[in-house]
Length: 101
Image 1 (spheres, rainbow, N blue to C red):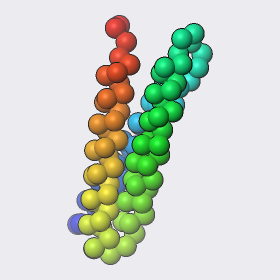
Image 2: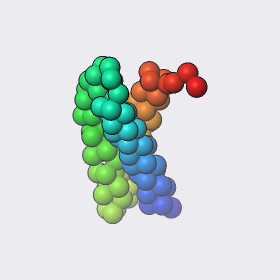
Image 3: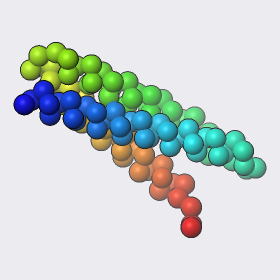
Image 4: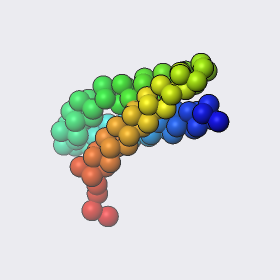
């Protein structure tokens, strides 16, 4: 039972980290095609290490789920932490660059 919960939490953390990284890449692409998009591109370059870090920890959490019960507990902590951090970062970026439409 603990293993199933650990896998679900690790996958949720991975999904949040991928969503944050994908949003940053889309924002970077849009900023590169738009005149005056350099401030957004600089912001994205500054946030990419955070996105990469949360993705790495989420992948580590998924890898930890292949271990025993103690590894599953560590996977839950790592998956939940990376997912929460990635989600908060994604929300902050979305609020910063929310369009008025």
